[in-house]
Structure formats: C-alpha cells, structure tokens
Image (cartoon, rainbow, N blue to C red; front, side):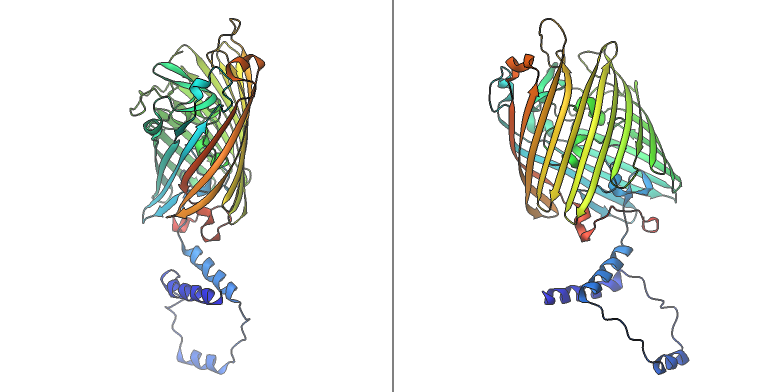
Length: 482
C-alpha cells in the first residue's frame, strides 16, 4: 500500500508543473540575498504525512481546474440544472459526462431501462388482457451546451431525444391506471405513451446584471414551459424507477411542448418565470414537429433556501390540451419540495414531495400527490414512491351508473438496484421493483381487489460526476475559469 501511495505522489509531482502556476519566476534572488539566506539557519518545517501531501496536491490541482456553471446563470452551480428551466437542490448529484473546450461547456445525460414488465400478475381484472407481461425499454438521451458571451452573457442549447416509439410501438408500455394522450385516435388507458423522438430542442440567453440578478429568455420547439417540478425522468429521486408517475399529466406532462417562450428573472435565491406556450399535447406522430400555437400561459415561482432544498409553486392556463376533447380547457396548479443531501463520497439521499391538480373549466378539480425517495449507498440503491390521484370515469373510460365519478387511486412502489459493472464511465445496474394499487370497490370488477405489478430490469446510465475526485459538495461557479 505504501508503494502505491508513493507512486501516486510521484505522479502528482510530475503532473503538477503543467497545471500549477509558476511560483514568482519574475523575481530572481540577488546574490546578497542568497548569502543572507545561506547564513541564516533554516526554519524547521513540521513533518507532513504522506496522506497530507496527497491531499494538498489534489486540492491544488482542483483549484486550477475550470468549473462548469449552471446553464442559465453564471452565478449558480451546475448541480441546480434540471429539465427545462426548473431548479433542483444544489446538493443534487449529477449523472452524466462532462466536456469543457476553450469556449464551450458540454454535458451529456441519458438513461435506458431494458426490462421485463408485468403489470397485473394476479390476472383478476377484465382489463388484464391489455396488461400482459412484456419486454420494453424506456429511454432518453440529452445534450446540454453553454458558452459565455462577453463578460455578462451566457448562451445555452439543449437537445433531448427518445427512441420510445421505435422500441415499444405507438401505444407505449403497460402501466396500470395510467392515462393520457392517444394511439390510433383512441385514448391510451392503462398504458404510458411513448415520448417524441425529438423531446426537447431549446436555446436560451441569460444576461447577468450582477451576482444576484439574472434575466433569462428561453425558446423551445419543443421545450418545457414554467409549470411544475423537474420532469420525472430528470429527478434523481426517481432515477431508478422505470415507471412514469400516475400523476404525470397532473404534475409535469408539459415537459414536451411544441412551442415555448419563457422569460425568467432571478434575484438571489428566488426566481420568477412567465411562459407562453402551446396547450395541445404532442400528437401520435412521434417523429414530426407539431404546429406551434402559443395559446396558453404559465407562471412559476421557485426558491432554493439552502443547498439541500428546492421549492416551487406554479400555475398554467392550458387551452385544449386533449386532441379528442378540444373544447376542454384546464387550469393546472402544482407545488413541490425537492430535497437532496450528500451523505458521503458514494452515498446520497434524494426525495421529492409533489402536489398537482387539474381543474377542467366548468367541472370539479382532480387532485394528485406524490412522495418518492432514493437512497444510493455505494453500489446499492433502495427507493420507493407513494402516489395518490383522483381519476374520473371519463378519464379511465368507464361507464358506471351513467355518472362521471371520481375514483381515488393509491399506489405504493418499492424497489432496489445494484451497480454490478462500471465501464467507460458508465454504470450498469440490475434492479427489481414491485407495486401494489389500492382503489375504490367500484373498480374491482375491472382491476381486481389488489392489483400487483412486478418488474426486473437492466439500467444503463452515466456515472455520478460528483463522486469523481472525492467531491462531496455541490459544484460552485468560478468566474475566472468559466
């Protein structure tokens, strides 16, 4: 072990001259100063341990490394980046690949689940035929790029792609009690729709007035308006869960919107955003660009009181979101609290509490709530999600007693995953999860008394960048090196 330490120290010593600034080479020592120095006895230096030497060399190298900032602020840490312009806690770990050139900061994210998915293992509901076991692969990749413009400007670009439709078909994957969007001009029930191939394409410019004030202009086609928390696929609290939440269309479904314009103003730890966007959800053609309409509005107030919390409240006035019911308009209101804490070099805990409500005009509101958490301990993760949602008979396409009732649905999911391989800065995890759903007795003839689901999967995703070099704190900006 001592030999290894010695080799590391020698390597640092060889590398450091190319990374550390010269030590006052422009002040040569004069001859008389040399004589005095030789005549004066040298001060006794405290003995340093080998580990202390390595730590000093490591810190010196890290201080000279350029640091990537937030995509929409020169004064915020990279870790606050999330989907669209939403914030997450500064202490959130970042999974991705990072590359810095002379002018550009590049970051690549992605996730793919190769899984066996069985959504009704008891087979006691009459809808079980649509929930047969199958293989599927929820997936997405994302590129984010930013560069500084002059001293106060920041340009950002993002591209997100998904091959959902290619690997799963137009009707997506089975998911008990899920609803939203269409396939072959019919509503999708008990299935999660696939995402568009181009799920995000946006540009933004941020002007820094000073370290406390930013003004951001964001354009997306498609993009994500200022409504809701970060989308489920980008929340680290749900990083190991392949399933979309049942409240997806109550909380964060606008993350793919064809036509978004957002103006955001940040003052210190708070930000206010206003968006004009297209209300209609994406159509069934997952490879085209839908017509932008800019007929809906949203606002969001976000605040990060500490490094460990991100809080938001938002509201959207959405015109004709459903293609089959164009006369319906919705007011969507959401609130969320995200929490992240780094417990060690390879241990972190991330959680989310989300509330969302859809209020169809001239009708009653439908509420949803979600609590989820993910504990990552070195190679092993433990996670869970609890959901409550109200779905109408019309939403589930059920006719009971000729009335459109609201049915409460409760779902509990627990799972674990193990990182069995680390290769080319990529994690390969194997995981298993199970779910139980509790609902109204009136739905039991259709779904059974206690529908159970089970999944086993292989998860491929990038490394946790914050674990590199023993980094335990969130990344802070360094203006001199941007």
